Image 1 (spheres, protein in one colour):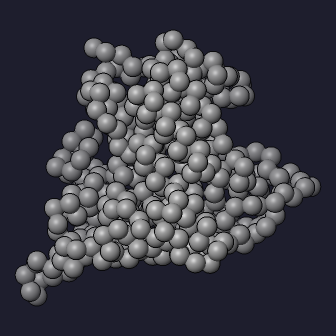
Image 2 (cartoon, rainbow, N blue to C red; image 1 turned 30 degrees about the horizontal axis):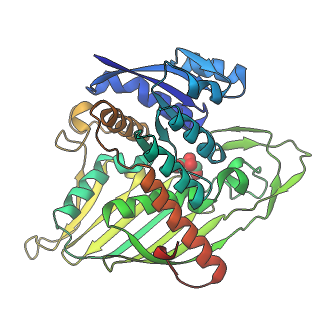
Image 3 (cartoon, rainbow, N blue to C red; image 1 turned 60 degrees about the vertical axis):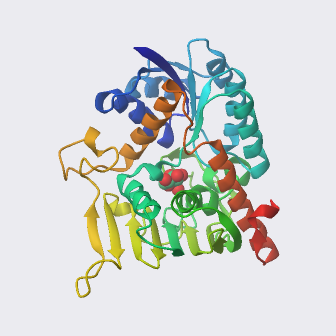
Length: 386
Ligand code: SOE
């Protein structure tokens, strides 16, 4: 059997999620290659060594330059903060490695375009980490929409609400610094519903947005783990230069209208991603915190029996579920990463296109940039103008 060797950059939240995905893959899915977790890479030798042992990597590197040039590596996976993506992805692609990159693809649209060009030039497989596409209930929504069950799509409503930075004393983590993350709530959270909307409904035509930074300075961060962070008691403050909250409306190429909201200031909402799509024959509603369920209304149901039905997308008939547990034994957040890796590995072994790939990353960056421009100029921005 063919073997594929992976090198992963990053060992924090996303590094752990991707490591778990590679470790689970061969146990649950039949891929056409054995996936070897060759090396994990990070700057802090103590941390990266511990992570390698804990997550099941054969070895580690402290230099990504070394990792991407290793002869024994076929795939480079990038989970380090966004300001590292471009340089690592381009070097990896120039070395002929296939590249998986976390979202957002880059700090801005022009960098994202450059990454796509280099990937195409080198004829490598490239995928971006829009993991929510891989929830079985979202795949079911896609199937219903593609089969015309909602009729003509008229409305899209999506929000991604978190509350981990509501405290003004929460430290200045990298997700709040433009030179490291590129964009705040919009690029980190909105990127997911922008991608889901493109996946389910189609391309955006224009947007009109408004963004706000509620807390303009925060104590400099000392330690960070996942979404938790600490600062020293007497820490100096630094400037927050990204959006804390973003809202926008849009028109889609197919004529549908969209309403969107991304924020980390919605007290009580922990990881509340939801999307609702309405057509003239039906609607779907999806809420990530109940990720195994899809609500579906069909105007084709008999009169007097109509209403939203709750579908448990956890039977073997639903995408990816055959690989997991007996019917009704639900799956979670981490499984979406296993599914995306399954598709990526298949695209490499079977030499077929990946999806979502860097071109989807570019489109997402285009919409993010259009919302930012619109928010600054206070008027509608056509996506085609960028
Ligand atoms: C933090 O806001 C975060 O971890 C995002 O970076 C992820 O993309 C999202 O899925 C969960 O929240």
